[in-house]
Image (cartoon, rainbow, N blue to C red):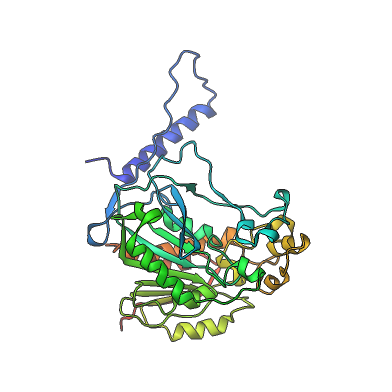
Length: 392
């Protein structure tokens, strides 16, 4: 049996302290003296989840990246660009470049070409293209994410890659009629219920580009999350998903498989009224929680305010470069003002809360994360409410 994790941490702390003392005392190493070995990486313990599934136990705080590097595979589902982020083999990212998404690729070709590389709001991902899936752990729970109006499959990378680094397979697509490219082309006919159905069929079948997941995902432990219109779309998926997380949208409806709903809202949201979201939460069946974020707008639950921040923001860059109909997105560009909560601060809080819920439900934690304590640790979280569905 290996050394307990807490003892390993203590030993590393003590050794690190001794090294600092030696440096402070000005004791240089002799030229031929053997140099101290690099600090050994702390190997995460393995824990058992639902139905005997195996996972790596995070070494750091739950708000930080998890123990897996994140791989990314691009495919198509019913002719729509689809991305899968997943837990990859530890160390397989060595020597690889992190993936950078080009938002011009989700625009009509003629419109994307108007933005030069130097002005393009590149979207950096804490992930790597086509890393090998970690097949020694799992099977992994699945998260389907649905973007909002004028968004695209990668709009909330900070959240989706975080979940993947903690042992979830995350899937998102560019939804026809809802994505940025279609908005710019004035093609707004959409059917999100059909899109979700197509994704579920593809994930059940696991053919072609998705075949690498066969035997390594658990569709019985499924979550769905969405932002804005995407959050409204997932609200009715409780017959298939165990966890629903609508963001800047509304509440969730009852479902045969629904075990927990998590309703997230922004206090200063000018697109979806905050009080209306609170009312929708009240009508959501328990178990459930509500978390409101102070001084935050509609786009808190995405990376969009961060994109092109130095150039006035994504929409301003598009307008300045003559992208047709870019003004249509301006009305949705809410929450990017000075003094508002951006995703650079907000995302770790959202990640902490959402991952705790996902772990409790989809990994069947024997000692559930204390959701109230997590919320209480952040001053940005207001109007927090937790209803476990049990009477006192």
